[in-house]
Length: 257
Image (cartoon, rainbow, N blue to C red; front, side, top):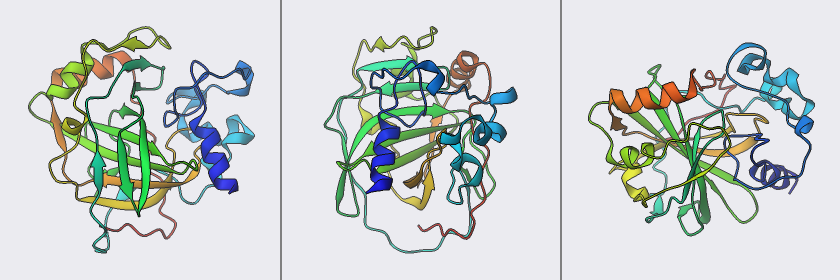
């Protein structure tokens, strides 16, 4: 119960005092000082997150942290994923840490017999997770939550190649001003942001941003999508710097496939 409540609290962290890129866009009345500045460079870089606030202690001492390098995965024949996505995105925001696309209710993932609802998705460049030591130009995180606040993240890698039509539609609305959501001019089929094959790696991990809450179910798709160099450049120029947390130790965790 305590873990579920903590995860629910992480999900309800809002903008503009944004505490975690895996959270749901939700207004907050908490004072700005309750949300220490963190980022990817200088004193706010990932190596210092744990010292920025007592709320971020898991970023330093946690033993089930994300991202990770995926290797030597055990074959466990997990149940096939059941994804029900539709034409959904309704707004996009540059929160200073990433580009986040907010979605209305109704897009779901069935995992372990439980229903998780998609809250939002966002991007990291380069990728946060790596596969057998290989980094990818970009990684997308589709953040889901169930009724009790438990979190499941579906990660999709992007490799260099042909332009991605779904990203093209989203990138047309990239907001340059931080913290100002922009209503999308057209809907995007979320299914186009998933590979045709939903085979994946699975492990237990954490949010990859403060407060680095653990107990997150991670599903990293094996098959990458493509994006063009121009699409990648649009994103990286908007962020001005890499926005990936380095891979974390496994500490004996097992990755299954």
